[in-house]
Image (tube, rainbow, N blue to C red):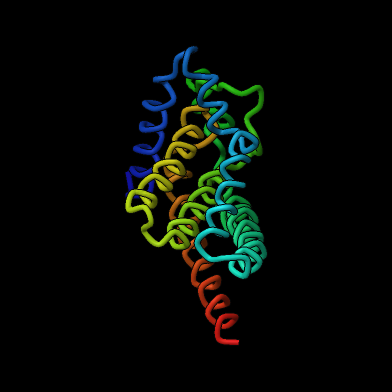
Length: 193
């Protein structure tokens, strides 16, 4: 067994451990955590925090930067990863038939590497951690824990392997960090102008 086969086997074993630990009481909680609509008030709260920290000019810069960031994290997770790696979601994997605790009605698209949920939320966490600039000190930890909970929910729900959310999280963190660099550069230019 080569290294890639060992990694895939370990990923499947980790998936079965997390997904198999599901319970009927926790299923609706994880469905809610994974539902993007649930987080809309938090997203709006992020915009308020941006305005409070960076002012109106900062907010006007942040909105298109955030749109570009989400476009890159979401579309990139599909075009760069899902459509090229072509790794089946665990709920579509024939070898795991009957073993997957599938909570939602559907499984999603055929391919799952990388998780777009993880990429998008880690991108938001990285951008907001940069924008808040350690005020308060625990903000970055809370933001990444929030993104991690959403990523965990995707494995729990049976639609992603752990590697899907880990690599998605790393990709999203990179995109979010680059978005903050772009935001800060644009903000500094506007202040100098």
